[in-house]
Image 1 (cartoon, rainbow, N blue to C red):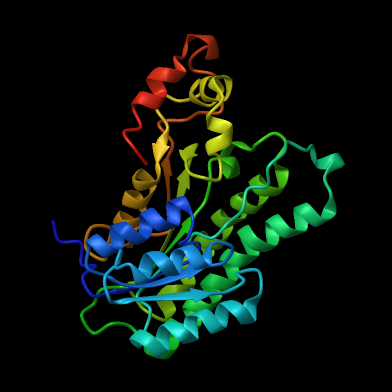
Image 2: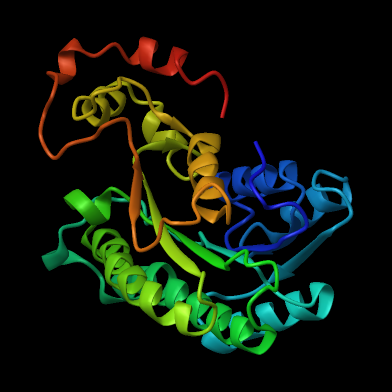
Amino acid sequence: MDSGLQDKVVLITGASGGIGRAVADRFHAEGARLVLHGSGRFDELQELARGGRWGSAVLCARADVSEAASVDGLFERAVDAFGRVDVCVANAGIWPRGDVALGAMDPERLTRTVATNLLGAAWTARAFAATLERAGARPDGHGASIVFTGSTAGRFGEKGHADYAMAKAGLTGLVKTLKNELVEIDPYARANVVDPGWTVTEMVRAELADDAVVQRVTSTMALKQLARAKDVANAIAFLSSPLLARHVTGETLCVAGGMEGRLLTRPEDVSADDVRARLGGD
């Protein structure tokens, strides 16, 4: 099935992490040209690129997404390399370990989480819009696309992680606004969000090694399985496609096994071993 992503320039923030790397793999499989942003694990990202994981049409660039000027520089490097940016995946984010109630939360932690997860997404969208305005809409009618990586924490909340939940919830207002602003630059431009639930990545692998955690998080899901990074990447690629999702904008696609904000199964009735057996690699 033709996704229309062949030769499109795709910029992915947070490409050095589990979901970001899977997103890079997915777009590479579609024949896209890649701009891969990294920060804390940037050297690892570069080594993978040098080893040929994503072919030759790839640029790796470091930036601090919490700083607007740094993000602007990232997009300038993308334009210098490829001339434009057709698709943006605003994926960079952090999830601070440790359950801390808001009343006891260190202001520095809250500020850093919001600066990275929400303001970082806003600076990315801002730079994408400015870049799109300079380049103009594509003559083939394939509209530009931006997809944000949200979280079910922004939908249901997450006890002990108010900083993360409030930052991810803010993406809803951002994307609802962008869907109406981007079309003033490109009449077929789209903006959407993917909300992953518990996904097996390095960020939460330690937590998911605990049977009790696996039982607890899957007890609110219709599907008793955890997401793989590639499950989220597939959803992002779909929403980014100017052909497959050409009439989808301002929407949130939840990739969380039918998660609800209530228990569907008693945790003690969930087999953690069965859940892990469904992963089949991430």
